Image 1 (tube, rainbow, N blue to C red):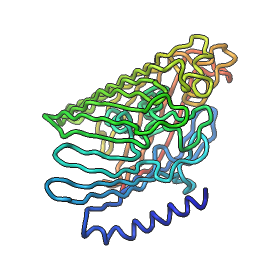
Image 2: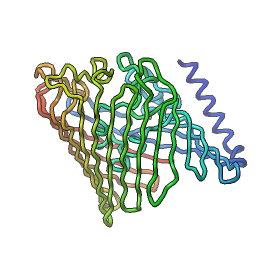
Image 3: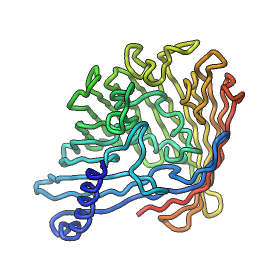
Length: 371
């Protein structure tokens, strides 16, 4: 593992060193996002760590003539507090965890091959005050696509490589040209993995007219779990309003529904239907932005999947029951690239957890920098 990481790191350094030379032939850029803060949730100790995500990316394109361009993007994610690769449910992530694609774009749209975000998490940040990027305050981070993994892999014995909520590997990604504000998106895996029932796939229709944006997204993973995501946003002067509706249909014969992951089969009221909604608002206050969020999970989380990882064994339910999430935050810009962010959140649920709780709070203060 260490040897593999060392080879990947040496490749990254070589790519960075070569970028200035390549620039004469193509357009190559280096970008990234750094996020670190202190947070605390009910029943947990204070932590210094990423509140969202940290990445460094290399992207570029080459003009092939006739309106055709070659493209690539390589992006890795890491933990700012330790400098290590981003952690996974079990083990470590791929080195190019965030994205590794190469493709072509032209009048037909854009096609990429490799590993990248599926439409849900490539677009849901547009409908959340925290850009779906804050583990404490974002209702979208908490409640988007409940129990849906676009790449569940072998969830009964997951590794960092074969389990992913948000990305497809070994896949093709197509985006159409924009027609009168509308754009069509199609993603599909090319290969089936161990334990897969089919290839994961997704289609989405997006619309943007400046102050108004919307998306309808349909996804089906390799375990035949299905997702419907609808999001919309509207800006009135300085006020930004946004929201989403999520509907997941779990396959009762799939591994996500079973004991290897959510184990809804063991709940006192087992269900294959998972629904949630999120609402949010932003408004300029002083030099910064006020953020308000609300989310509702209509069924709630099974053991260990709620805001603080509660279990509900003693209650005899093995799930939390309907859950509400409330949050408020403020982002204070120190420059166009750097900001101080504060968030406070509360989540409450129906059934008493094994430590006698029906609610939990979270607070965070962090610093972000984009380059």
